[in-house]
Image 1 (cartoon, helix red, strand yellow):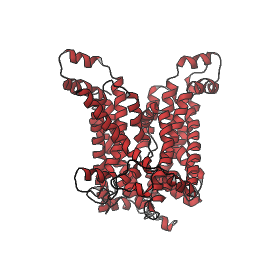
Image 2 (cartoon, one colour):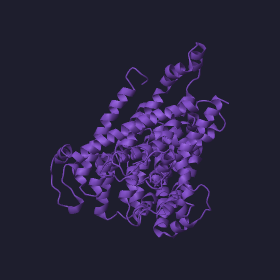
Image 3 (cartoon, chains in turn red, purple):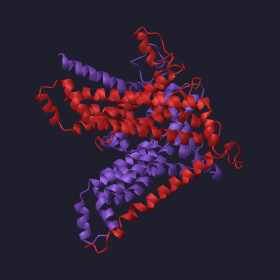
Image 4 (tube, one colour):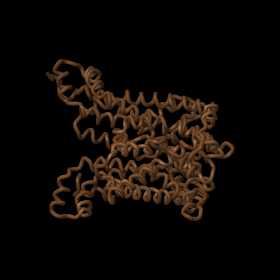
Length: 293
Length: 270
């Protein structure tokens, strides 16, 4: 039936052209990006670029605004990932029982995830309005003095963080919930039969079973928060006084406000390398060699 | 009484936290300006459609709606068409080859959008393509193809290998197996992939912000014009926001089982 061996496997023709195209596009793009970052290319005076070597990268090291932005990216990403995982896990454990309308709750949890991020930003900007917003109204009910959510340099970053947590904690919940439901229940019951208390079952049996799912969702959230853009653009535009400018946002400003695309790409490359190193470190911590995979 | 009541109380609080912001935006879109800014907030009011009239009278918004529609449908259809052919081939490959491809696709997710948007912008200004729909469609198709491939592979994997073997015994060519056996069998998964691509493209902001011109602005870019025009017109803004997000919430709920699956593979989020 199969006269021709795998050497001319026709199914290869289905994916090779596309993979080759994607690879070539990626390689060409990478080379072009590196080429631009080694030159002094500005959109203000196109066609008069000159080779500057590593100047753009050296400039980064001596640029306090870039360093502050990098630190803010790290802070935002760490807080967002840790809080979303902790909160999401807490909700999953809380919902881990049979109750009426569980399916409906799951559907409703989907809503923030699929909501247009720009609309999420507008929504929270609306709620955080200092004079007429809901957040300050609730505070005033509790007799707490009003907060300038997006106007204060000490607070604005955390206000954006709240919006990010609101949008993405449900994602953690749904993903971990699915892992929990596909996990075997026998070990849990065995531990209970052996007389373990409920918190011991959760801590020593259930959490280790969820470790893989939690690690994956932590990686995804870390990757996406370090690149977060929409909420910052809509809610604060990096302000006030640059207090919410992350490195990704600074790169955008350099490219499309200052039109200094060489420096912007150097920033983007540094951000990519930094992200990769951070993720590899995170990966080796989350998946030690002896563990599963 | 006791634990059970406490549980349902917690559940209500959770749902309130998740849904209240959405509820408040939608409700505000039906309020008059006076009601929208009343302190304490007005919970019961006589609804008005004035904000929606303002939005529909805005020609920029209407053309952005058309742009978003055209760009997300075309780029997603293109990505799914190309992606399903590639996914069919990859699904027949040994595991280690596929894992290498998947790593490559995941690495595309790590790169910030800035990295590919800047060179595209630069080239587009050079050839004068900034205000063209095809530029945006091509950009989104490029981002959606790897996503479509990796999601479609998981659907093709669900199809029993016996179907393919049986067709081969009957002498069917690979392409006709793909066309007559796999495509019909994975129809649900293909539609889900298409819907997810449309959803991500419709919601995407960063690429659109950079690569659109006056005539090609998509909805997320267009709505930001309400932000700077004579301060913030919250009434019209909430109406526009409602119109932008509602179709995606409906689509997302239609394919709800696949949304989390899709998002763990990699998405076009900037």
